[in-house]
Image 1 (cartoon, helix red, strand yellow):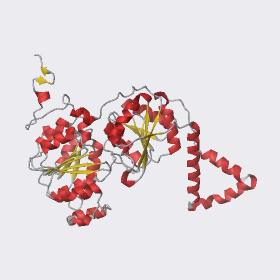
Image 2 (spheres, rainbow, N blue to C red):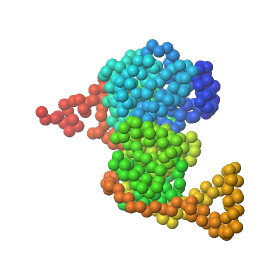
Image 3 (cartoon, rainbow, N blue to C red):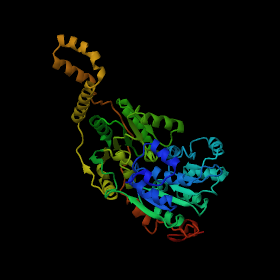
Image 4 (cartoon, rainbow, N blue to C red):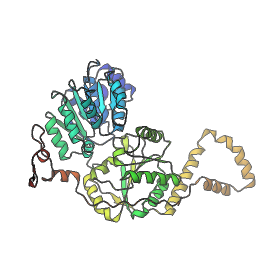
Length: 479
């Protein structure tokens, strides 16, 4: 790592970085920023939460002029949440240079976005679908773009945005700087880089393990019908400050957070069917700590950058092994520890082994927690609360009342009563979830894409031989 002041940045950027509290660069920033300042194309492989936005944002804003004559920077992200977060950080970095970034995403009134574009921001941060919409309407013009960023590229490709990304990149000048960031390097990422980047420098920032070592990881083997009770017991044992529970389907998200609410937990759910206004409310509640548990699908949670998440629970094992890496990356941020627990049915153990291969880490097994474990966990949390309250300077207001109580009751009896009153006993309110079929064993995505009959091949003009030819992998199609 190095000091930001050693990078030779302009005064406006140095002032912004100081105000943001940045001092030393993270590994991805130390490797990326000097090369990006030279105008080189870069492929960066790094975990989420490692400072990627500043890694590409600082050199991009250093390069871009503050003149509002045309759009100069383009950042493509997989989700609206990430688009908003990236734009916010870029605006903090560019605040004194007066370089502005505008988020563009689906779910927001497009006329409002068109009006905002007329204010001539120098950078647009957008999701592929909405960017394509503006390109068709000619409300975004990319002819003078100097820098293009592909953020979370593996997520965009796994979400099916490959053709949109190709069309966007074909619409920007070939003489540009391109930076691509991805947590994994599947074959499709390499193909994309080969077609649209100029001699990119590859930067890999990762430990020997794909997953963050500060995160404790384990799994419990459980029958499908027991999952909800087991989750509740773990929540009682761990007492997380902020937790994300990952579920496979939108229906399951709704049922889970409603069930958790019935049992007295502070929970809300987020998935793709929610309106943007509702999504914003849910995320604000979670970030401010008003909601302790966020239940989410993979798509809804992609790109979320939330500090303070202490626990991740995989209620359903993820569909793709790479998704496991992204899920548990929601905790253990900025060098802090975290806990990731996966609930696995007996028929899904083989799928767990594939996850271990991709994550390059053995995930240990732990026994099912019991109701007694949950009760002991709640008792321990109550004791911790009492001990912390002893340090509260306002405690003297209660001493007189305590002395009165001690005159008529034994101190041990009084303390026992207080512990009973404050301890949340396990709630067994019946909750029934719709059944979900267990996952079938699948090959890791990288292996599937490299299979000769599955991999799409493009020529230098972007012609997809499998899709656009009259020939398929099995021979000529019948007319």
